[in-house]
Image (cartoon, rainbow, N blue to C red):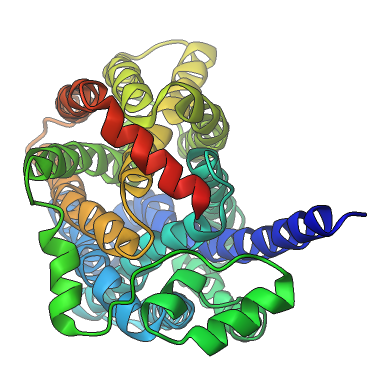
Length: 441
């Protein structure tokens, strides 16, 4: 085996190690995120803590507000302490927060637990995306992120089965105790997950970066060292310099609509399907089918985005999502409904992820965490609004309008990301230069 072939093989093993560990972390993220929606029909039926639809919507928004805080601070914190340490802290936080939910004796304490869990959940996802982007092969960032995000939907599937198997015989608290188990994964992350090479180089820790690169026989990335708080703010301000401000704003608006749709549907899908006349077991089955679609969608969209461009694929996917979500407002035969739920999952979940992929591809390695974190963070305002909106519609007796409202959010994201795609198409040279930079990385 030639030295170049050996170098490639060791680099591939390192990439697989990083992606595999991040995949497991995001799996637990998805479990913790979706578990609330999976147990919500039970909480409403038993009137646990005196919960009502509008209060349930507020609770859903508490978690997404926490995710907003976590996502907005993730880039800055990751640039300060490192992506490995931040990922470990996030897994620890949302696991312990689930314990708070499990032992809670009031709605206020339960809400506190969901808010703290949201901080950890919101901080983990953009950090994991940035981490795998660091180690992805040139030109394959979108598919790598797509593979990572299948874990989020695998966690959603797991949450539905946890609810189906444990809630009736053991109570809703048992589901949240399952979400504490990721604490056992923390020592594994600390021992096996390498720190981001880009972070080490940017912090001037060249000896540590060189030792890690030599250990796995990979090349060091070309990153400009960033050592001061002023430099970190400069990374954020760089998103608005020149003509970038409009592109950044379009991505933020598209992310707002996308996450409103994602978390609105994730929180209320089982309950809304109950209002359409389906049994609870079937409503939870729809959660499984929806997330199976999400896994398929991530793989399909990732490959399509690497070939045709992430913004273009995101716009098409959001259009198809809006159509699928709107169809769910009609009571159809079980087989047809299941197919529509599956296809909606295919397009909805991967459409939002392709926004992250677009931002990651357009960013340089040393400010990628900031760019992805802020795009995710601004979108979290939509994630806060979505669960609240669903609760208000149900509380006012307008649950049938829930799917229609979420479909309109999909249309808005299609428009914003479509405009962003058109603007990118008019700047081919800038795109080519960025791809060359990523290939070198």
